[in-house]
Amino acid sequence: MAVVAGTNQTRNLPAFFEQAFSVPVRPIMSPGFSLKGHRSISMFGTFANLLKNLTAYKKSLATIRKAIEETQPDLIVNFLEPLMGVYNLLNAHKIPVLVVGHQYMLEHPNFVKEKVFKTQQMGMKFYIAVTGAKSSRMALSFYNAPDMPQRKFFVSPPILRKQLFELQPDFSGGHLLIYLLNHGYAAEIVQWHKENPTIPIHCFYDKPDAPAEEKIDATLTFHKIHGEKFLRMMATARGVACTAGFESVSEGAYLGKPLLLIPVENHLEQYLNACDAERTGLGMHDSKFHLSRLLEKPKGEATAKFREWVNQAEAIAMRAVEMTAGAQARASEAGTPVLTVAR
Picture 1: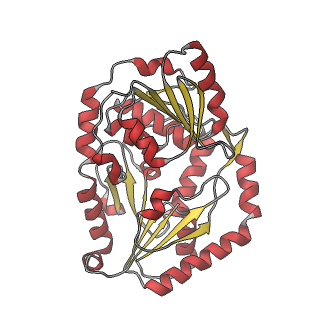
Picture 2: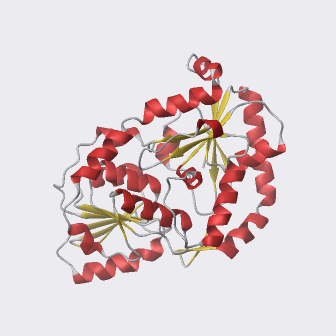
């Protein structure tokens, strides 16, 4: 087995990801979004960085090639790394590839339809088409939807870290938990706290020079992003507000927490996540951190249905793997190499 993982100027590999594998993770430089004011997506900056790092991406493709040559895998599982798709386009090989990502629900007829961000939607469809070039697709979804086997398209529940299933969810902590993908939103949290000083808030963010924990006062604490600590505090939170990342929404929904979803400005993917989760009854979509909405009573019906769906993830994912690789996938269980590429 080999693992290759993409990093960029806004994304480093989390510790829990590297610890999840029994082999060393090979990092590569990968394309990523550039931010404006630590709040919104800058399309100009993103394109400029893409051109700036072309030499680094060429080296990343060489790393992928080397990993394939060394392991001779029977199956490549690509967790939405675009350079794996580029490699497939540039190189003739017969290794089956399964690309995994919630973004592929954009290609499913049951997915939420929105008329905003038309240019970004075209760009996103092009991006996932390149990333999934010459690959079967496993689209991660908040809800069950029909597979499209004629297109080698499979719908799967979210694939969540195992620590989540070891937690006993309750509301004993009494605090609101906030996850900010970009620390530029911290001022909104501070403002709401000033107006509601009696409600405890724990906020996790990505501010580069921030300490591991910064206690502003008795009821507001900022934390540097820490996956396991965040998950533990989520289990006892009164409610969760986050910037509509798919995994964060899924974890909060599984634990039955009231969810307030505020997409990063100009971020199509998160906007669609928020709309889709709200349509499914898993969360509340908003454009600002109106945290008072988290004080509402959670909806148990949507949580129960979602948990039932998530609990099928392993069986559904294995079916997609076997249908992609056939006999080779069954051989992999006995030790035949698999190459995992992630970002």
